[in-house]
Image (cartoon, rainbow, N blue to C red):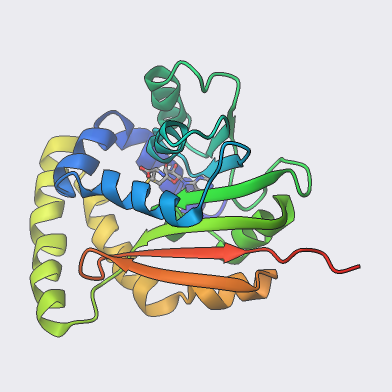
Amino acid sequence: MSDKKAQVKNMFDNIAGRYDFLNHFLSFGLDFYWRKKALKLTELNPDSILLDVACGTGDVAIQARKMGVQKIYGADYSHNMLKLFENKSDWIAGRLVQMVAESIPFKDESVTNISVAFGVRNFYNIQEGFNSFYRVLKPNGKATIIEFRMPSNKILKAVYGFYFKNILPLLGGIISGDKAAYTYLPDSVEEFDKKVNLEKLLLNSGFSEIKKYNFTFGTVQVVIAQKQQKKY
Ligand SMILES: C[S@@+](CC[C@H](N)C(=O)[O-])C[C@H]1O[C@@H](n2cnc3c(N)ncnc32)[C@H](O)[C@@H]1O
């Protein structure tokens, strides 16, 4: 098993019990708004078949359900995160899969939508993850990616950087009991920001139409990539 694969799984298994509270507390509740807005931009409808990858405790899937989507599946690598999702929702039982995003055990062209919120950054191989997304999406299907980013404005970057690198790891560490996990968060966002070009990786996987949005002073990005309709 690759280092990152094992490390990420252990980390989320370890912090699962405090994950929801810390998510809402450290984002000042904005995480609900980010997921809702991203799903609105995705234009889901009651016939959508959604696979929420790296679903964790299920907040994207729960939001999609509130918006009228009935066919929802959740997938994550961490057993403890999936268990919490199962305990939170009475409708998801039997629709949760423990798997890695890099190898999704779904049939080709079986879902209309894939969502992944704050998960891509943790994949051990993002390109393989996107190849997998492309394969299981139906033609015209969309992948919606929500991820943190560092703001481009220098002043904002300094202020946000201070919160993100000092206050957040301190509070996250005290509350979760796992300081390393909340140090990993800002470190991984910074590295991701410098090294990963989501658009390029999505194009490499075959996606054609790519739309990008920034929320909350550029601290969160949403990328919606569509798989082209087949030409005969
Ligand atoms: C920050 S949490 C996000 C959970 C949820 N999507 C949310 O919006 O709160 C990241 C999740 O990604 C999962 N994860 C990380 N790497 C993964 C991979 N390669 N395949 C599947 N799940 C993965 C972790 O287990 C964790 O539950």
